[in-house]
Length: 458
Ligand code: SAM
Image 1: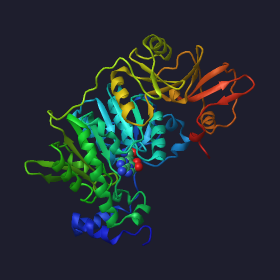
Image 2: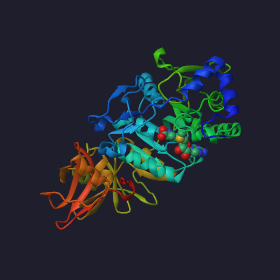
Image 3: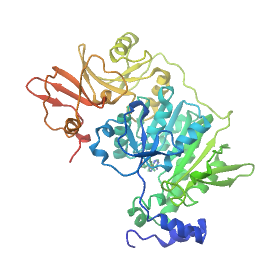
């Protein structure tokens, strides 16, 4: 099959879903160019230099008129915005319109991190997000995006959904953005067409059932489960929703829609109730293919609470004592709530509200990152980590230097640089006031501490 041809079985499946006349319009829409969109990081707000228009269902979401070279924009590397497909930003409308309570959230299939950074922004200082990815290389990309976003309220884990068993009834919200057959990506990524097959759809559906079977039990009483895919077929959408209603006691959640958005509501009837799903077709919505459903666990459902423990015994993480923590909190300019941990000789900080839950997670999961990595200390001197630079925490006591565009790009390329009248020692570099990273001025030369693996390569 040619790369951009649609698989026959896909065509008949869509034909059945849409009817002949609408299918023709859908098929045509697959040939139109995709629209680039971004979601702004309000906590790192800068003026976005591209012509843009609001995405009506997404707080902080914008369509761009053209796709610029994001790589050449230092504010992109500083975490000022995330390039994200518009349909999936509907999650923002769900959270805001339902006023979903903040707390401990889990994004079970999180890489590369689009929806995790959205959840992280929604939670702000009032929650903790566990962003999990089962594939190691993808967990690394997820970690990088979480660090760039910089809000310090996220734990990145690398686990199979099965590993979450001890966390039954633990989360206020669980998002399963499931691995799927990717029919909604046929426009953006023509390769997806040649990888599609009816067998793959069945395989995805079976895997999705395994994942949601675990995810469902992790939601606490009164909490929410969000299930989404970027595919159209019913096997991976309505069938999974039906499976969830059969396996668990969930209540339906119906989301208010503005008809002008073009989002299609779909229904699944259980014995007693009607459940709702939302489908995004490219011929109706200014976005790619997407499906999402929202369910709520009854208030009386099982909730796991975490007992307060004086001590925290862990094979690699150590909680820093109260006296030392108070000193550290002053040094890093935190709001006074910070809890500090040592991983070997590297310090990490988390906001205090959820430290008990973090400690519970550390016993159960394989943590790849959490809170803000601050760095090491040599006597009273900090050897600051790049992660601290990109976080929202102040960087009091360090010299700062604002870069021009060319200088910022050279820094991100890790080119050799010199700067006039630079203070000796650690200097925080910024572009448009957004921190980009550290250099160390040794007088005769300047060392660039931008992570090698993140550098701009062209
Ligand atoms: N939520 C992400 C975002 O918004 O950037 C996209 C997630 S992508 C649709 C699905 C993810 O599920 C992939 O990162 C994939 O590696 C992961 N995955 C694959 N198999 C899985 C499994 N058996 N259980 C959980 N996650 C799985």
